Length: 313
Length: 313
Image (cartoon, rainbow over all chains, first blue to last red; front, side):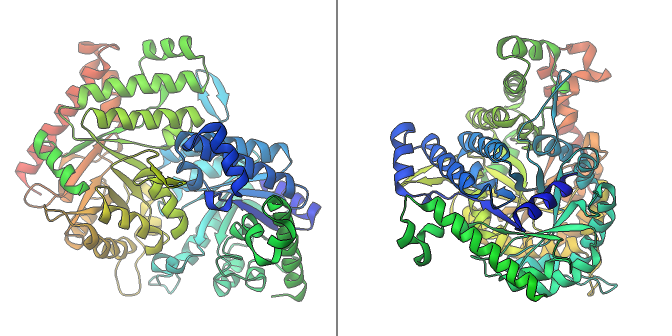
C-alpha cells in the first residue's frame, strides 16, 4: 500500500515533509542555466536540461532526509514535450534515490478519461497486450468536482496496487472558499461534503497502518478547517501545501495531524528550492551550494515541524 | 478574440460542432496500428505514431466541415513523453488545416501554477527573454474548484490575446451532481454559483460578436440545467460534451443554445472516431475508409443539430 510506504519513509527520516519540485527557471542558479543553454540551446531543450540538472542535485541533497518529492506538472508542461521528458526523468531519478513521487497534476475528468489519467500516472498503459508505465508516480493529486465516477478509476488503482491519491478538499489559495466554503442547505460546507466523500472512498485502500492510500489536500493556510477535516477523514493522510512561501506556519500545519504525530505530510516548494537566494543561506553556500542550502532549509523545516508537533495543536 | 474566431468557423461551415480527438488504440484501424508498430516498435513510440496517423487522417477528412477539434490530454499523457509529442503535433496539424484547437485538460491550480498552465496551453513561456509557445492551443478547459485566483491567469490571457477557456460548470457524467448539484443555503445549486462566477469573469473578454472568450462546459446529458445556465451566463459560449456515445441527443444539446442558434458548440468524440466500426458505416467504407466514415458521421451530426435547432428548444 502506498500509504504504508509513505509512513515508513516519514518514520525513517523522522520527517513528515515533502519537497515540491516546481522549478521555475529563475529559481535555478545561473551557472546551471548557462551550461544547459550552451549545450542544448536557449529553447525548451536547454531550459528542460537546466531543470533536470537542478532537480537531480536537489534530489541528491534531500533523498536521505525527506521521504517524498512533489513535482508540479504545470512547471514541466510549460516547456512542452521536452519539459514532460524531464518530468518523467525527474520521477525516475527520485525513485532510484529511494524517494516517493507525488505527481501534482490535479487531474479530473469523466470516468473513461479518468481511467486514462490513472494509467498515465499510477498504473500502466496497455499496448497490444503489453502493459507499460508512462510516468510511474507513486501518487497523484486529483480534483473532485466531477464526483465519484471521475475518481473511481484512481481509487481502483490504489486498492489493487501500491499507489495513492490526494483528493483536493480545501486548497491553500486565497479564493479557495468561493466554491469550497459554500454552505449547503443542511449547514455543511462544500469542503465538508467532499471530505465525507473522501472518507467513504478511503475505505477501499486501507493499509496495515490503519491509514488509507486515498488521502486529501488540505492547505496549511486554513488551520481551523484542517481541524474539522481531520475529524471527518479519520483514515486519510493529508497532503498539506501552503507552508512557507504561501504563509502557512508549522503551528498551522500541525492542525492537519493526528494526536500520534501521524496523519499528514507538509509540502514546501519555493522555500526549499530557493533557499540559496535567502539571506539566511546565500552567504554561507553561494549559488553553487544551492543544493546544500536546500538541504539545510529542509532540516530547518523538519525541526520546525517537530517542535510544533511536540508542543501540540 | 477566440470567440469571434470560433463563431466565424461555426458560421462558415454551418456547423456548431467540435470533433473530440480521444484516440484510444482500439479505435484505430488495424492497418494503421500494425504499420506504426512495424516502424516504431510496440511501445509508446509505435502507439503514438499510430495515433498521429489516425488523427491526421481524421483532421484531413473533417477540416472543411467541422470548425474545431478537441484533443483530450489524458489519451496522450497515457503514452508518456511520446504521447505528448503527438498531442503537440496534432495541435499543429489541425491549426495548419485551419481548425481551432480546444485542449481538453481541465487544468486547475493556485494562481502561480495556473499561470504556468496558461503559458503551456494558451500563452508563451519565457526563456531568458524569448517567448516560446509550448502547445499553442486556441482554448483550454479549466476546472473552477479553486475559485477565481486559479482561473485569473487564464482569464488574463484570454483578455489580452486571441485565446479562450471553457470553465467546467455542469459536467456530462452521471455523478456530476455529487458536488455540482449541492444546494446552498440561499437555494442556489453549486453549478449556479459557479455559473455566476463565470458570468462575472466573462466580462473581461467579450468579442465583437457580443459573446465572451470565457465559456463554460455544460453537458448535453443535463438539458434542464442547460436551460437554467443559458440564462445565467448570457455572454458565455457553452462547450457541450455528452452528445452521442454518452447518451445526449441533439434535442438535449439544443437547450445550451440561444434562440438565434448561436451560444454553443457540441462535441462528439467516440461517435465520430469510431464511425467506421458501426453498422451504419462499416459496410460502405470498411476499415480503410475510417476517415470517410468519420466525415459522414460528422455530416449526420451537423444535420441532426440543424434539425433540432430549427425545431427549437
